[in-house]
Amino acid sequence: MELNVSTASQGGHAVVTATGELDLYTAPRLQAALAGLLRDRVDQITVDMSGIEFCDSTGMNVLLSAMKRLKEHGGSLELAAPRPAVKRILQVTGLDSVFTVTEAAPAMDAG
Image (cartoon, rainbow, N blue to C red):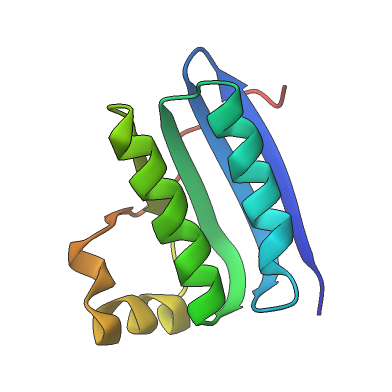
């Protein structure tokens, strides 16, 4: 399965919407989108996880790495609307206490 990634931003805040499966093969696509936002000095990123059907450790590492880089510059990364399967992975790994998890992504104009 593919991973589709789209980005919308306003000011210093961006919403990254990812749909499909986030795994070893597709994680570089999300990593590239997040790296681009970090280069653009976006300080708050929300990753809309509502369309992610599967996420493995590679996907989680991409998210953790981006969050760490953002925090180094005073920014933040949050995960929005993860599906039950992804929520379970976050709970089992203890990452639900590392990431800020919200029920929905903020509305933003595509840009």
